[in-house]
Length: 125
Image (cartoon, rainbow, N blue to C red):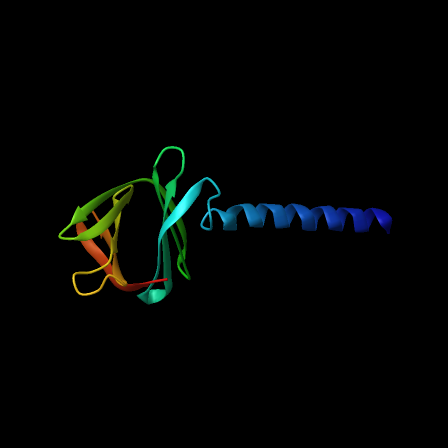
């Protein structure tokens, strides 16, 4: 009975560690500071982070469709609005920090092979 209890405890601890490791990838990064956090239509929660040491931009999103983590983003001011761009294969993710009408709003755009697949309105948190 003790052996079964030890094995069950070990299995539970191992499962928890593995689960926590994968779920934390889309959460906070202790080596980076949060520069933008938005809640978008369609259930998307989008965060843009900047690494303290290198200045590298990181994209983290969570939704019912899954979580996504991307590195090596770029940033550019366009018409008074900052846009963060990230790429994953043929997909490009653009996060607009504000709109011309409101700095408390934003937009998430997803492109595949330079064709717009999705555009979601967002609000800053």
